[in-house]
Length: 189
Image (cartoon, rainbow, N blue to C red; front, side, top):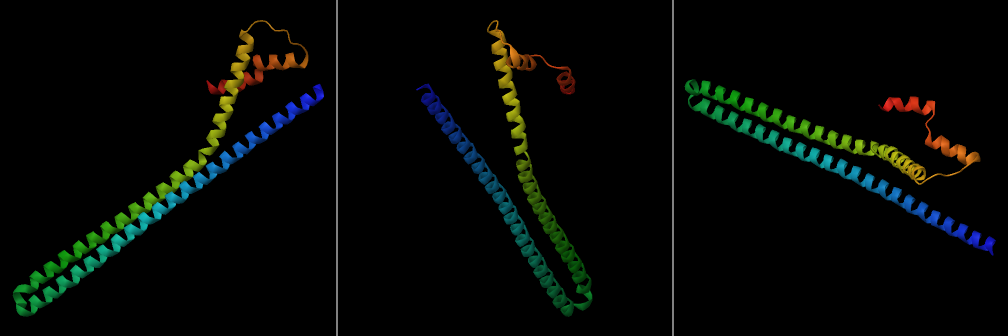
């Protein structure tokens, strides 16, 4: 009966562990899917921002070219009507419109560069988020070590115990730092 009971308890523990393993595997898979969705979303929004900036730049360039052509045509018309008086004025207008067109083109290019930089920043942010997953592993190890130390503290605080053999040696090793551990821990202070 004891053997049957022990095997049932063992089977219960194995099932519990299998369920826990499945839960953890499912959580990892869900995190990976969420992470991939975030990266895809950030890349997509960066592409949309870049396309919008390019389309605004194209519209502004076309508008500037149209303004330039209109001003040039007006200048030529005025020059034919009053050739001597308006020749200087038409040249002044032409230079002014060219400067405005150059300024608009430069502004559009600056907006494009800003959109490209924002896209790079979003991609870098997504890559940084991907890199931060390794920090979670370190944090978990840290939390497990603190939990282990609290168990050792409770054992030490709850009174005298007599433990011998390999178990006793192991407990002493856990409670008393060795010279190797001390030299490693000095780097933290």
